[in-house]
Image 1 (cartoon, rainbow, N blue to C red):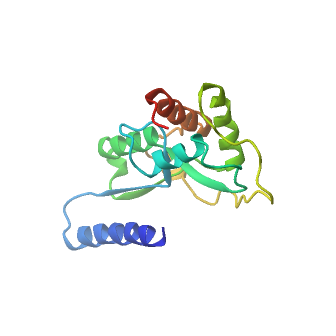
Image 2: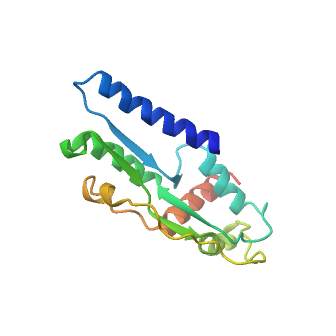
Image 3: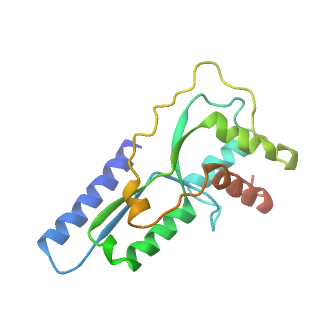
Length: 167
């Protein structure tokens, strides 16, 4: 994962460096955290992540937290970055909120009656919640993003996978 993050950082830096050396055009960088939500295909990290929650491969709910953003919000941010002149030459962090995985698993366990196999037993230990340290105010102010509630994001994604029979 560290190499992935480094590659994203270096790619963004290269884009800004290119623009500085070749003035005359605008760029916008969109920086989403872990993207979740309904997917057009059955491939990708978010689909694998969701399947691993739903398919019974986990026996306990992890005592951890993670940062997510809805794929539909990411798509809207890209569209608005093109449409809104005030977005030019800015970088936007797309981040909804940090959520406890116990909450995510709790939302998704409601789908167990429809064939999901989401664990409900908490792992030993304490929940790890570092808090919301990411500033997404620019995406809200400039791009007018109203982030989708995480329960809806996760539930819509899970329901899509269940409907497709792809667990």
